[in-house]
Amino acid sequence: MQKISISFFINGINYSVEVSPYLSALELLKSLGYTGPKEGCGEGDCGACTVLVGSLVNNKVEYKTITSCIYPAVRLNGKHIVTSEGLQTNKELHPVQVSVLENHATQCGYCTPGIVMSLFGYFYNSDKYNDEGITEALEGNLCRCTGYVSIRNSARYSAKIFSKKDFPVPGYFDRINLLLKNNKKESYGNKNYYVPSSLSELYKVKKYDAIINGGTDLMIAIKHKGFRPEAILDISEIDELNFIKYQNDSLEIGSTVTLSQIKNSETIKKHFPVLASTIKQMASLQIRNVATLAGNIANASPIADSTSLLLTANTKLKLLNFLMNTERIIPLSEFFISYKKTAFNEGEIIKSIIIPVQNDVRFSFEKTSKRKAVDISTVNSALAVKVENNTITYINLSLGGIAPTPYLCKTVKNFTGKELSEETVYEIAETIKYQIHPISDIRGSGNYRKELVKNHIIKHFYKLYPQIFIK
Image (tube, rainbow, N blue to C red; front, side):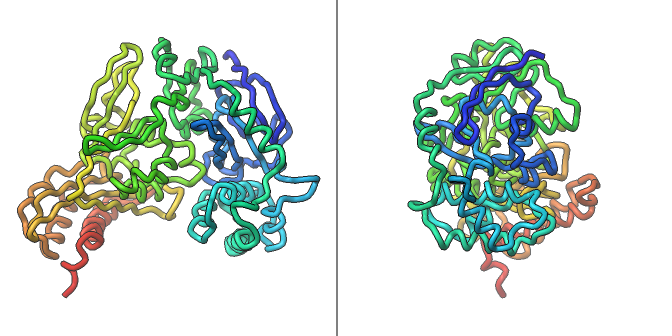
């Protein structure tokens, strides 16, 4: 397997190395002597490997926390990586590190570097500090011995002693940021791992075994499933596919837009806010900073959180065939063929996701999982409903976790024309409950899932129309 030459910075120091397509960023950091980031779960769930990655976005260097254990080392090309070792100034601990120490927020210390980097990233990027932001920043970090109260207290202490303006940053940041701004973005890689920077470069690709975007599943498959593709095509740095726009009563989201970008987008919050709130329940901040909505769809998981919501919204996909330079648009409801099988033709990628904006339709999303964050749903569901003169004039319901593919309930449309009442809601819930036949697995039995679906439907209506339940 031919290695790829990459050049990048770690804590202000320039490196040029050759890496295997199968190497993770964490493994590369360890090989270069950086022992701060640790490997815990190896799947991006525990946050011990968290580092900060700076990259040029719209002529501005942005720093985001990532889990380095599932981040391909190849992708570090042209970027600046900051680890816990790089926060010291004049051999003195950074104030965030001091706060963790003085508030007794570390014990064995294994997870501490990842927690420090998550907090540093939060304070560096946030204009205002609050408990909600602190919780979000730390939701992807697990600690088995210290206790989260101490960790949260250290973050609160830090939030009191400095603001966005006076938050201390290592001196090398300005120098490296200037160098990154002056670097011309170019395609890189080789026949084994290729990263095009434009659509014109993508059209030159003739051979691939795997296409990745966010790529958050790639390293897991390589490490734990023996996945060894000969030719990986990484589309994550194609700027023409990174956009969110509203026109002709529809939202269009480019395929390389990350989940964090969508969650924080004012355009999304204005025209389809339920998508932003749904994404907030997916994965962790570190993973949302890398993962994409297009990737969540293309992965074709029957339990993907986003697809339930998007199905109820009558979403369409714009598919680009880079081998033939053609495009086509298909409904999302026709994209999932069977378990993990989609309607992709050879050479096709998702170019964008098109969501019709229905201002007179109300939406609700629910998921049941063992944890509030960084967990896979046992069942998820989404409801779209329109009520006029106390009559249901439009209804759409989608379920995840109860079939081999994301499940759009066609029979729910039979309730169009029914009076909106508590009795109707329970009738809908009971009807759908007995129409589905979910499997039993480690996350729950089939009967448990049926009850969850019933309860989800009732909860959707309670959120959207609480008045019908008040006697």
